[in-house]
Length: 302
Ligand code: AMP
Image (cartoon, rainbow, N blue to C red; front, side):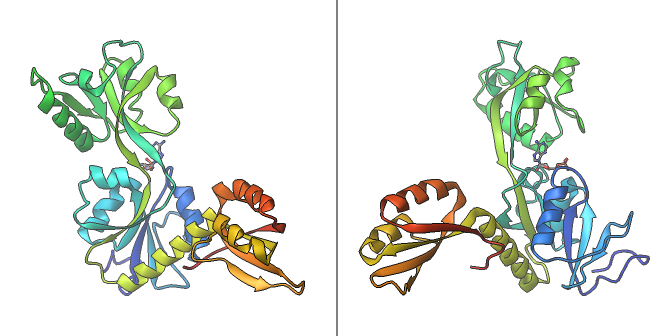
């Protein structure tokens, strides 16, 4: 694949699109670092060659990445699920994995002061402002289908600061991404419907030329996500307590059990999900485990 003449030769490289700014940018740079992708991006250049893999990073607006991947101009990329759905590219892109960051909701929001708009159904036939025209039209078409008076909802596009539209008199409701809800509350709005739960996703073109390289990236990302989710827990236990302890900490596959120099005792090493850790440690203590240690996992490969 070639870009333009003044750009580096990327013909033998997998093109990997990364958001060039915005909310996903820092997360993506952190992820690239954690999966061992080394590159040097020159100022004002949107293409960077990866020095240790046959990959070229292409920095693009998050909102355009799904379209580039769907059309095959880019092989693999990171973008939001909301963007894939809004750009109607889901038939042409393969979702390799959800990445666990950029989590938020696409919601219908209405002014708190408008007591007659408490569900999205109440906004059928009214004026809605959004940057997500397609998803909004689809949602309101469903609602119009069950509405008795069959009124058409007016959906208008604005590119940003969508939450201002009701206060300024342009809209009766808005559809926008919401994370904490603070921005909406400050604008006097509240959620009356959730259209989509979204997060960032690793996607590829369904017919891309570098499936092996894409799998390597997927495995590396999976390793980083596993390392973030789990810790390694080690403890000692008398052999007769082992069965109970293993039931408490079954691990991802199975615990590693080694014999101790002390007769009748074993050492156990096992992966435990971070969010369950405190509870598991309490249970292990009750089951007779001693010297319970917790170690961070730097990286993992299943
Ligand atoms: P941006 O480049 O900042 O416009 O954001 C691009 C993507 O970030 C969105 O399409 C969402 O997938 C994701 N995102 C995550 N949290 C939020 C949020 N609170 N508001 C907007 N976008 C968000």
